[in-house]
Amino acid sequence: MKRNFSLLQNRKFDLLVCGGGIYGAWVAYDAALRGLKVAIVDQGDWAGATSSASTKLVHGGLRYLESYDFKLVKKALSERSMLLQVAPHRVWPLRFGVPVYTDSRIGSLQLKLGLALYDFLAGRANPVMHHRHFNRKRFAERFPMINPAALKGGFTYPDAQTDDARLVLELIAGAMAAGAVCVNYCKVTNVCETNGQVCGASIEDMQHGDMSEIHVRQVVYATGQWTTASAQGREWCRLAKGVHLVMPGILHDEALLLTAKSDGRVFFIIPWYGVTLLGTTDTDYHGNIEQVAVEESDICYLLAAANDYLGTAWTKVDIIGKYAGVRVLKQSTQSAASVSPSAVSRDWELKTTEKGVHYSIGGKLTSARQDAACIVDTVCAWLRHNAACATNDKAFPWAPQENFTEWAATMNARATELGIDAESAKWLIRRHGTRVTEIFRSIENTPGLADRIFSSIPLIVADLLFCARTEMAVHLADLLRRRMPMLILTQLTKSDLQQLATKVSSIMGWDDGAVNREVEHCHKQWFAE
Image 1 (tube, rainbow, N blue to C red):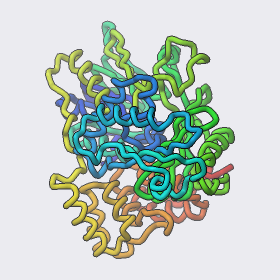
Image 2 (spheres, rainbow, N blue to C red):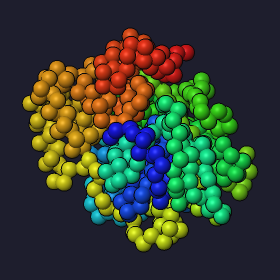
Image 3 (cartoon, helix red, strand yellow):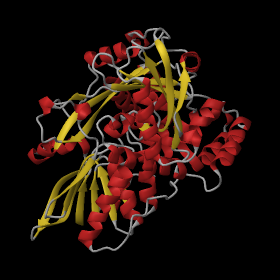
């Protein structure tokens, strides 16, 4: 994956996709596979906003059963099942525990019925993918970190997990392999029309200030929170902020779904890269869409919600990292004041103008592929291009062709031979799929590359260099937040950032001045109080 703005110079495209998050990536990938000439640009980095600030789940949304949103749950569960099959390196199973206490808002019977319905909507005969009940003793043994006082028992049920930024990146790579022109740090400054139809766009290279004029027949805006930059977009969208805290690792192979006692909202405690994700909040957002911050009230809410269940309470001192994102929800016909963000549907819709411009509104990470297929169907209809969706049941670009379990065992054995520790090897395979063999080859030549970058994080030096060399990172934060999530997995000092930037400087083409600028910007953005 190489960034090449010149590929946009004076070209003709069937489709221009604006926005390189999960929806834009799926649209570009699907459209390119259908034979359309596609360009996708983002004014920042791939997955630079909400698509790297999710809860990292591919799930049906158990809580949506309470609002009787069965259609959305079934749709998401169908996608979960498919993605587990076609992208086993990218999407992996994760079971969730749900404790039942004497004062729980939802009792055992109601929860049992809900989980049975969840199993039914998933449509799987495999009992491994069904819920299970545990008595008080067995549930407490399974989740020893929770407070056993007043515990009555609990359930576990299946869902799945991913690395959201890596998911988007792999789709962009797939779109490029299918012929799409994909360039990050590009801004659409103008869209041209002829006879009431879109015909072209002006694109600015945010890195060097160059301009390009391209001919386009259709435009899709999958710009997330930036949709609200226009008055029309504000009529369509409602924004809600979600915050996650990164806490010390207390879970291994299973997660927890809990209910905040203060307001009845569902939140999660999830294992991820050896630490714990705690989230998420869900509050209306009216602030600056360019600078979405974690507030003191967000931190207090999440810590209080978690500490109502944990045997050993967390404090602010325990916080390793934090991040915030803004969800786009469909604007409700009811007043925002009367409906909380949590009660607004996570379903999606497409707005299309008579000019051949389409706007993606709302949606979920899990169901984005299906929604993107609808977008491309609409584009193809406008273009009279007869081609069916090409992404359903299609193996991911970096997925092995052979049996995944056997392939992964072979890769893990090779990693052990090369001196990569087991936890780092697990995440290396999940992050890169079949491309892991390229990383292995670099270690064969330089054994020290198998070492962890930091002892507390399961990420190795060879991975850092590979990402810098092959994954279109432009800035240090691209590399350390989205290509590999180091900025939220540990507290990096300015000295740490300097060493990392220096390590990749020759690959990135940075001189000493560029290294210092990248370090200053990254430190200010992520660690300066």
